[in-house]
Length: 427
Image (cartoon, rainbow, N blue to C red):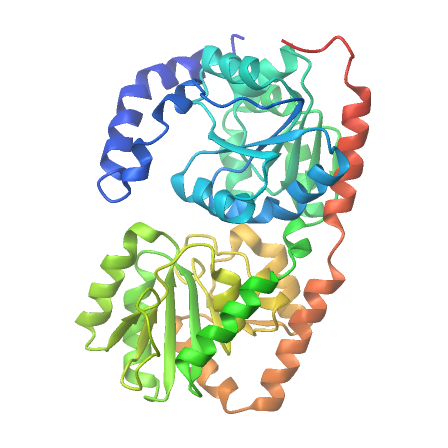
């Protein structure tokens, strides 16, 4: 409690500023002001029976959790999965993935203040919890431990940079990690970093993202995209971040011929209009994915202004440039590109997905480029080398297939955790 007290006081002091930030973000995304009570542990919906709680903070974690959530529903058919988020885009993604599934509820996780965490746990009574990747909330985990609610940190990853940040607060970090029932780490390197911070009960289960199957409807949509685009070659810039688009457009405008289309998909939907203005500023004709009809021959950039269609974008492209890796954001997941056989080019900054990126490069599924100018040149070269392009596509499919199985291993861990839960546990 003493180690968490300064942390809690910081939260209480920061809360007014957090609310102001919500208002600020709501200027571009009004959804930030919806379901506001849930952020303070006040919920209108209830589960009809026993529950499993799974936390996926935003879009990436939610999409990664899809195979695990489907496995949870199959393994515990009497349970409802309470899926918590922190962002409207994460919530929208879960609705797109599970909107027709009555046994999946989606709500916001409350801010990490002790009494708010207790309200959340008291309302939903989860039999056990799953937190995706590295969302560690000291007060919430402490409340779970007091109420004997086991919690697994699943698909856990920890970069060297994040490990150094956690190491600055050793006592609070050890206490928080100690409240977890187990950690399912993606790689041996992740496990070693967690262990160096004082974590125990660590298993290496692999990356659940490899278990995501390309949905049939996404592949069908990719066919529609290709029909709209026509015979032109397509370079996809996937999940780009602020500052990357300007560099990309500089390179594309001066290097790419008119018969190559740039499919540009910003990571955050609130930036769609901003990126459209950037394209116009580079003198390139723009068309939006949201506009009906075929892509005009004069169009140089197709803006992917939609959510939940990344598999379709990857499957419709000839080459994928992975966003977030060209400036120091840490990169994005390239597994989806590999799964549909789209060769991937990554930049120098892949510290959030370092082992996956290095493995993909080693197997021939991806190439690392030092700049977006170099990446555009390499992409154009691959489009003129069908044998090399086909070899990278095949390597990507094999890489994705060979690394599957993390979901099964994670479910095995959860079965063990649930079996050991005291029968008297509860709120």
